Length: 270
Image (tube, rainbow, N blue to C red):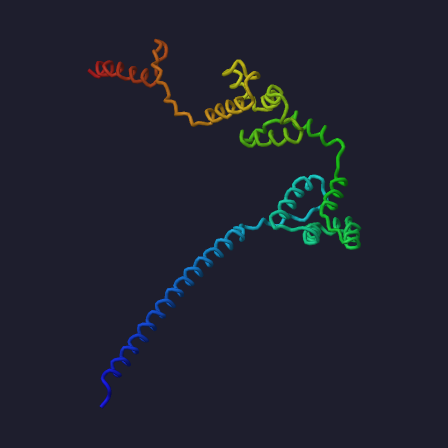
């Protein structure tokens, strides 16, 4: 027979071992939970860093047209090509090659020496190309001609007021007249308006040339809108006409003659 004391002690030891294993598993589970929470926090932090490091995507600007060498085209081509370089973040040789590609073949030939220099010295600066064409297209009379165009600006017959004001502001900028006194700008703008609108302004305000420029423009726009509103149709007036004694309808006269002749014909028959 087995010793009962020995069996109890063995059972007690087994229970202790099981309890210890359960405790160890609890500790391990708690440690795993802590590691999982720490991993989640790290992943969240990495997501935030990734979002802040990645710039928001935006639509790319279209490619500017190829420059044809004309001075008038250069004025709009230069801002367009510079904006494209900034938008695509091009610099160095990449920017130089892109600008080179946006030149027509004759213009590429004219700056071929700049490309050779850039390759030899390994200095790719697009401003060298821009400066070359700016010198080539420079007009020493440009400012004087711009002032003349501005001083002679006139509103065309079929031109809306909005289009005329936009053209006026552009010519004022080109002539450097944006900083002129308000009286001077108002005088040029007023002189170029259509005669009907100019007359309405002069009849509605006695101090046109002493008000601020912005206030004058608002006044012009208000009168222009008012003049373009559809007018209600006018009912024709009914004029009561007093008949003159001599103004007798020939048909009525003939009818009177016939009616007066009928009794005479009856008497003759009798």
